[in-house]
Image 1 (cartoon, rainbow, N blue to C red):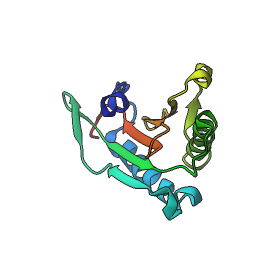
Image 2: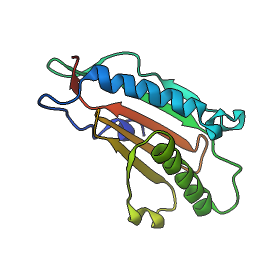
Image 3: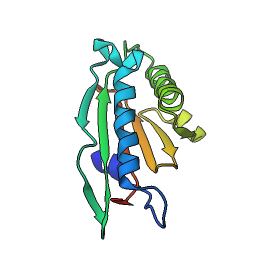
Image 4: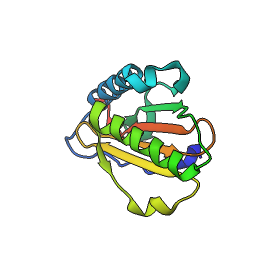
Length: 152
């Protein structure tokens, strides 16, 4: 699953955003998520698995930052589809309204019985966020990554 979340990073190029700008925004996103009223609730068991505080080499002279979080969404009911749909709706709302990501929607997922994938993007400064929503705990597994960017 970790490989699934870590894959698909879009490379930065040209004189676009820098790692410094993207990592500052990613740090703000982490703070906004921690301050969100849903995630502040201790019952969500928000757990920061990886903080965006170190440069990870991804290409010659380029780096990226990664932010990973898990959280519980509940209470669970006997209707797994409904639980997945509710958790998906919640995380899409938080990402788009509180963290200002432009969401992409895959309507084919409504037939998936075992998971939902949520994806959002901030083209400026170059951050992609992916959340996999699964029936088992922790139900929400978020990975946000900067593009592969020059340091300055």
